[in-house]
Image (cartoon, rainbow, N blue to C red):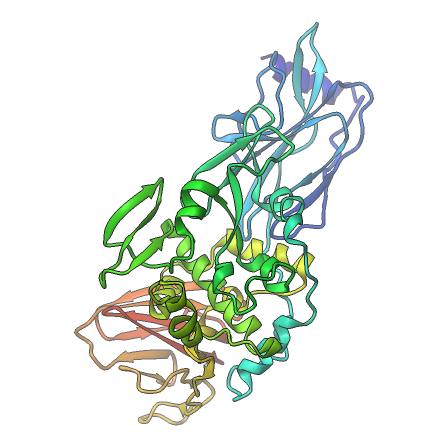
Length: 470
């Protein structure tokens, strides 16, 4: 009741009216918040949650940044009327309520200082980064390499804690502490700032010993943040060692959600937690593409598997496993925001996060281009409307795409098999999912535009391009 009474008096006597919190510089990973100062209060508390039904701070309690209020959290507690919110994630809605911290006779009383508000983060910050890239051209691979190589600013490997940890990976937790999560195992390192490395390390997903430039540590590839992730040193990073990534069938050891063991070919592999598999795969594919040919060094997986790994007495790194992980764990809001953050400091992007279907146009064994059949397909029984054009990504599909005069349609040749369909827009965002058993799938819900369609059927993956012009 104190809070409700105080709120009414606060408004009615007119000392302060609610002033809109100013939010600026919204990206997928941060936002700047500013509000009017109030010299008559002890400070401010900003509550953040994932729904509009936010928990209110309790009178009499002194909160610290990161403290929990039920399912919600104190995003900020202090006297300065501004706050840089870090560690946001892409395509999320964050709900906020700002309170003043006032003296209630020796203990704090919290009064709403503004109307609740929401920050909606964008899907990604890609913009026109790939505007000059045409995936239908034979020069696609070299063009894409040029794009992700320049501009590029090398961020020191030793600066990882001042960059990735401080600005993105570390998240607030209770009692003014922070937490960094091991991407391989989901081990949580909780610490009181400043950050101390042990027991966390910077894991080279593309192992340092795998690099054609080994053993140099001053290279771009050694410091490239697109494949550097925080991991628990002794039980995750050290256990992964030089081993290839893969699916463990027989477990030798495990630590939380990461495990070491033997795959179905009785080869030693390391398996990270499920939600890191796609991220790890895209990091490895990026490194191969980004650095191949530079200084006349061979970064193809053929070179890795036929020369480098045998020299380390290691099994091959299965490209097929990486592609399976890539499609089964498509980029999420964390990974897209991380890609954006890395571009903000390093200037380049991982294209397989932005355009997941592009992996189908590259043979990563030798980094050669997979030609695209650009045959235009229209309905053979009704050619009066040819405005909707479908372009094949890979030939010899077990299905057909065509326009029936009113709707874009996929017809499965083997209509006894269920198909799972994902439709991605030009930004790489999944905008439609379908599951169908009848053999015919329509896309009448989609507005005009360019799309990528992923079709999964009986364990097989297919990608097609789709241009809709109703």
